[in-house]
Image (cartoon, rainbow, N blue to C red; front, side, top):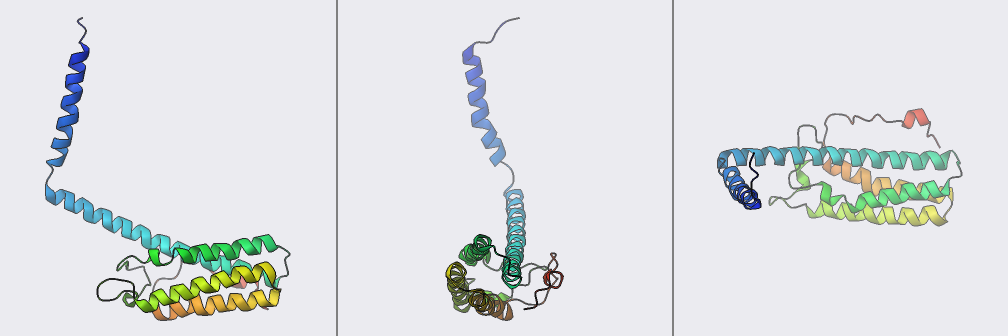
Length: 188
């Protein structure tokens, strides 16, 4: 059996490095476009699903804050962590609404975007208000009484969540995560 020289290995390797990309790029443009559209749809669906998860998690953080405060559970570090989590999620809010990121399961209204596909100024303003209220909530949970925390949490919900949902969220399929508010008995 005869051994191949290192030069033969190098030649074969160079051939592979040069020809494989050429063969791959020779696929039809139509196939590449189809794959690109499929990838865009997959990414869009993933973004919409992630956005739904973020909204559900925000709701659970809010619900947990109410529960801890109303049930007088002495857990200030956890209360602060939940408030900080809400604020971090508001930082990412605008990025979650890519141009026309709507699907049959999405409840986002088209009025979120203007005619050119940019986020509407009204939507951006509500996102800023939500962020401001979230920052106030962090300061409130760190230094204020339970009553003041509940008041600020209510402002966060009304000026942020509810205001935006009343203007920019339509009817649609229910959230897959059920509400546990009744189970937790959150009456004041």
